[in-house]
Structures are given as structure tokens and as C-alpha cells.
Length: 215
Image (cartoon, rainbow, N blue to C red; front, side, top):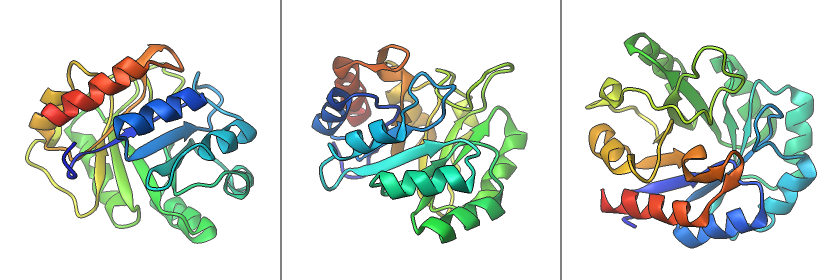
């Protein structure tokens, strides 16, 4: 895979998932700490999986509007390289989390229309990376992992002064088009490489990486 394309496989739940993501060439692996998600892990399970990750692959923990108690316990127990804030955390909260835990922060931004683009500028000066995702559909219980894509035309030709990842409904079948239209150099996938909610498919992980490479 070209060095300019980096992929995050998120929502890993088993050691075999970690092995498949690493073997495929993932730059990041993601662990979910949010009980409504079928991919959610206990702290002990997240620690066990994190210890399976070889050096050179970034370990990211996804939380949603987590308080200090949870983040303190998470960072104390699980060896991490980055925190992903996937809720309604304010720019001030992003600063607080970075200062308290000394880890880079990836902030997720949900897009549904052009009006949502202003959120990106609000966080660009405080987050270390952005994850540009689809805004969850009405009634969804989770802010991500809903297998929903947004209109990539919203970000065609745009750039921001920090690294960002494209997420939201990506699959082996559409990732090449997504890369071409968005010019994304980093990609995040979760449900798009699953055979069932929370169950990763090694063949789909490989197919996703290969399709991204071909783009």
C-alpha cells in the first residue's frame, strides 16, 4: 500500500481481528468503549487486545461523551496511542482531555449537509486529527458504525490544516470511489468489513485494503 494511504480498522473485538488488521497493513486499530455498540469492550478486554498489537500500529480507543472517571480508568489500564472522541464533546473538552491524559485526540465530526462543515473549523485548532463521518440517521443509538455514508461531494476539493480520516459507510465496493472523490489519505472502516454486527471478516478486511490501494 502506498505510504500516503493509511487505514484504521475500528471496532475490533477479538484477537483474530487484530491479527487480520495488522496482516492487511492497517496503520491504526480501534477499540470501542461505548456499551450501546455491538463492538463495545470492557476495559479488561480492550487491554488484552491492545497487548496483541505490534509496535508501529497505533492503538485508538473510541469513547462517546466519556467522563473523567472512565477516561482515567481507560488510560490507566489500556496501553493506548490515541483517544477518539465520538460524541458531542466541545472544543474545550478536547483540550481538557489532551491536557489530562497526554495523548493525541482524534475528534469525530458528523456530516449530513453543508451546514455541518463549520464544525470542522471549530475543532481543527484543538484536535490532533479529525474523523469526518456521516451524521447518524434519526433515531440511531450510536454516533458511528451505522453503515451510513454521507455525500462525498461535500468535501471534494477541501483540505484542513491537520490529518483527517474519511469514515461512514465505507466498504470494499465503494472505498475506491470514496478515495477518488474525497482525496482522502486516511480511511476508517468498521461495519463495512463485518459479516455480522461486531464480527470482523478477515476476507473483507483484505478486500477493503486492496481496493483502497488500487484507488
